[in-house]
Image (cartoon, rainbow, N blue to C red; front, side, top):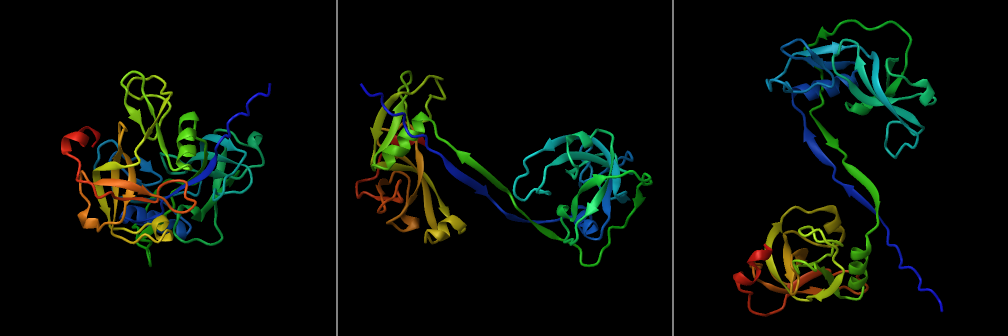
Length: 322
């Protein structure tokens, strides 16, 4: 008798990326422009504390802070952690330490990288200095990293007017997360069924709600959901939104704005999933609209949902699924 082969373990690399443009107030503008000019600015609170990086409002009193001061480019490590596997776009491409550094003249610590040959060369209390980037543009990366330092300490913080020619007034913040996702038993079954153009959920044995996509356990009852149930393929629009901003992933698919993204309660499901509505003008989509999936050749999931032509569902039928 031959043992059954174990099910394939699905894995997929995923990237969550959202770069956005941020305008800067006078404090952050002065801080980043100062880095471009090779100096570090902080702010002084009403009780005399110097905060680096600077903030615009006192974290204790919430009062506005505008008094800028220049601090030293040398400082002391207050705590650290070794990073032996640098990731792309981190400050250094060789192993380094993440450090919190209290710069001379400052009372709070700045997080950055320390270039050190190994963890044995790093300690709390060690002296370090800024290593400036060869080309500076007005960003935190103008500090290339910190490096060990055995010279004299810097002095007290000194006032600075914050005036610069061609000040930095905005930045593009690159928010990105790379990871590998592996679905569990329940979602693997769901994904495999979609490749066969079927939608399969799982029913809670206690409350009997059918979850689509399945989660492997009922979040309300806390019990495993092992009873698989095929739902749909048709469903009802429970609520929706009109999208007027073009995103990169939709542009690549040839989707033009405006378009409608909706929550759709498939027949037999205990909650709604989301999907794009097509085959109808965006301003004719409505709650209660009956829709069905449209599959593309070779697609592993519905491309969009279109009206079935049936009468709209009565509100009482889907109101609990909104």
